[in-house]
Amino acid sequence: MEVSYESLYREHRSWLISWMRARLGHCSERAADFVQDTFLRILQSGTVAAEITQPKPYLATIARGLIVDHFRRNDIEHAYLAELAQIPEALQPSPEERAILLETLLTIDRILDGLGPKVRQAFLLAQIDGLDYATIAEELDVSVSSVKQYMRKAVLQCLKCL
Amino acid sequence: MPEMSVSQAELDELHLEAAADWFVSLSEEGGAEARRRWQAWHDAAPAHQQAWEKVERLQSLLAGAPLQAAHVLRQPVRPAQPRKPERKSRRQMMACMGAVLTSTLGWALLPTAPERPATRWIATARGERRSITLPDGGRVWLGSGTRLGISYDAQYRDIYLAQGVLQLTSGSDAQRRPLRILSRDGMVRPLGTRLTVSQFAAHTVLAVQQHAAEVQTRQGPAVRLKAGQRVRFSAADCGRVQASSFGDDAWTRGLLMAMDLPLPEFAAQFALYSGQVVEVAPALASRRVSGTYQIDAPGRSLQTLADVLAIRAERTDSGWRLRP
Image (cartoon, rainbow over all chains, first blue to last red; front, side, top):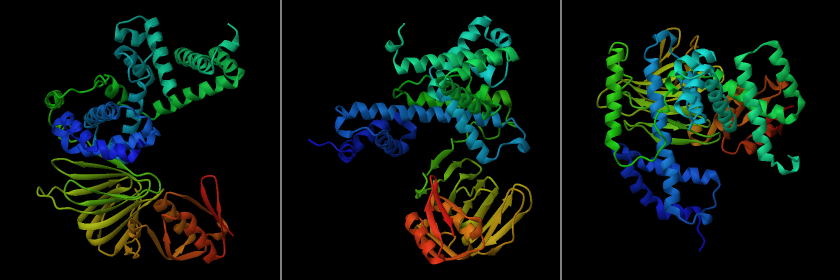
């Protein structure tokens, strides 16, 4: 039987909406948006619908990723706004700048994803705050050679993602 | 190890490892000697240069990060794991986070941040157009290549226009929170309205189709517009209020209407609304355009324009060029 993208959408959309509602709890009114995005992502990925042998687990995997991304984005945006709230009005970035800065934060967050907390911190302290390795070693309570190890690991992962 | 046995992917990985090592040792000791040794490695093979380009990409990404980045990103925000239905705990956690933040920073410093709902960002691709409904029942049309954020909080209904064009038909808010459009060049306050805001490379145009609106540039006094008026403003100043040409919102219907427009101005508008790059040869700068053009069929429209003006429309790598 020919499985087209349309039939995938038609047959599984309402199932995916209920799946999504159950997981979104108080955000359930956004379920339809997430479902739309899920199908959009599949379409954009160029996956051949006929090759999807188990549609439900497949859709659920993509949808789960979207929800995680969404909450992560929210968390970072919240943290950034809280930081901005401490800056005087005159130094606030414009809405456009703010949007670009937020995107940059999200990109950096994405390429650091999966690294351990110390590796992540060492990288940020060195590359964003400009601290030298000895200071970072002290801050993280590790040896300077560990800091170098962390840096190498973090940088390599970043290069692979870029 | 004989080279034949190493796959391309493995080789790429080795070069990336070398680039990462160089990056780490150069950030540690950036002396002339270290630079010289790095340069020798860099110049030795095209594959080294390719790997180093990624380092440069990383550097420019980091250079664009806000000062707060290290702090904001320090904690892996939350483990990337599927969330089981204990949804409520997350909400409680956010509430706790808000409480912690407010207690550490004090209300005065942090009036709205913890309760502020996340901004919802919406973007259109080049050449795409779509309309969305706002939480207050209002409607926004997004033109080609537009990115906007919707952030309704306890005090304001804010719409951030990061880039592109929008048409807003405002809704009504039971809480009577002021509606604001925040853009690069200034803030627009719609007053029960339908209006368009178009953000060009160096200026923004506000045109009011119904009722009234006020624009406040980043520096300078507020200017009020009635239906049928338009104004061109930049961050520094606001131009004279003019009668709005009938076509300011034609793009929402897929059209660009021009009434005796200089060709470069027409090209800038066509580019913004259609998402195409349109260059105009300097020799044609004084030519003028009138007529209605379809932005969804850019090739055909520009060919028609070329026929009417007896000029040539050529494809370029990035879009179109109009020349004598």
